[in-house]
Length: 230
View 1 (cartoon, one colour):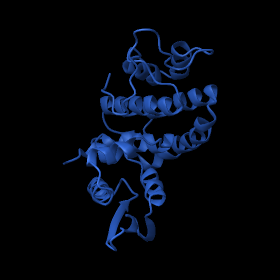
View 2 (cartoon, rainbow, N blue to C red):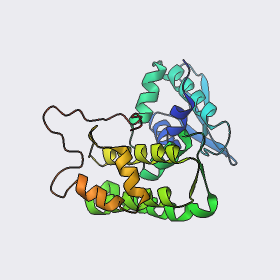
View 3 (cartoon, one colour):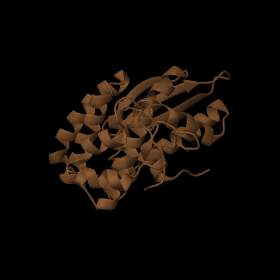
View 4 (tube, rainbow, N blue to C red):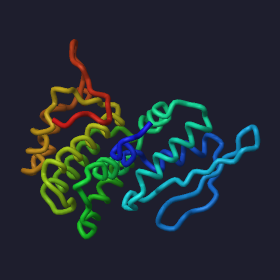
């Protein structure tokens, strides 16, 4: 079974490392600028090794991540797609979600000189998303979206920026317990972000007193982290 490159880049190295540690794997040593070696022994005395990549900017990140899944499938005697689903559905931090979705767009890249402001906002969001602090979460998402839409932190075409940022926001809202309805427009969201109105857009679409993306009878809610572009 072959995995798509964007499927691999969306996986969080931290989530995979946590999974390995909780399933009998032992961290052996780090490989500078590339990742870490993890080891495991089965009941028959066989030894398995995974080179877990930790840097998405390294060219073989997707290949190494797919090799990790293949090894896990062999050790656990599980279907590879099941292994992938387990790792993909485990909640990642907001910063990891943004990193993964941006890396999934091949023609997008970070502008290192302008990335710092976004990273500070993402760190704040990492802390608040666990608390479920609605106002702070929506404010941070709006600020990040506007920074990425209007600034030069991302290098690439506008369509790819919109796709990556909107997918990230939907996944983060899902992690916070607020699945987004299919009827909510990513295009409208992006237009608001580009004009500095993202926070207002959030307030209008997700008013206080209602869960974000609150379901109504007959409404289908998207829970797929790889939802189609709007």
